Amino acid sequence: MKRLRILIADDHALVRRGARAVLQSQRGWKVVGEAANGREAVEMAIELKPDVALVDIGMPEMDGVEAVRQIRQAVPNTKVLVLTMHDSDLMVRRALEAGASGYLLKSDLTDSLTKAVKAVAEGKRFLAPKVSEIVLEAFLKMRSHYPPGDKPVTGTTPRETEIIGLLAEGKSNKEIAALLHITVRTVETHRTRIMIKLGIHSLAELIHYAMRHGIATAQDL
Image (cartoon, rainbow, N blue to C red; front, side, top):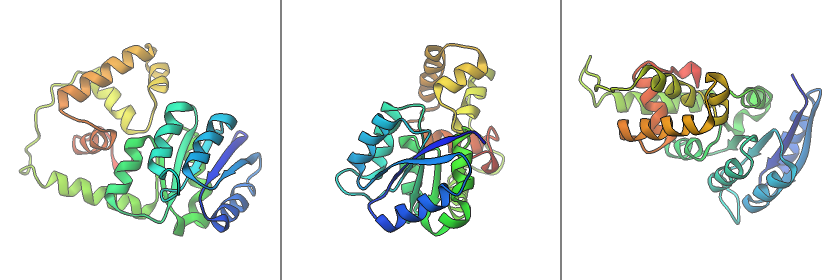
């Protein structure tokens, strides 16, 4: 695993201390900064440009979801892993929509933190086991609205389907462009066309769509 520079953002000093101890036990990993609120997290991410930002949801001054959104917009190369005690489907969807690559519960910090950081640093998605169950339950509930064997006609092209799968896996526009040997502008055009064509308005909806149509599975996320 390459050297990793990590930012920790949480308003509880004890959580930051615990996360730092787990992360810096890994060879080559370095915690380059700690933020105690959402606004500070964004400012430090812009200044330090870490490889991974560990962000809590419930923080003062700016909530974690907005912090995730602003970090991803300002420092697109920084992957964001949410570390929180909130385990609702709504919160998971909000975090993914904001651009988070992973969602980990604080109860899983000791067992899964290094695995989660490694995954998001490599451009993959990571959902804690309990979070995966929440996402799957929401997907099954959504799928139940369709009669057995009945799937809406999509009309997407093979290239659009390929891009849907890559977006669902957590790839950025820049990463997709490099993988498919096309320009970032072309990826953005495809993405906009896909959203309009499918009537989808968020990344979370796109992930559910990809799972429903077998373009991505829970194991890919």
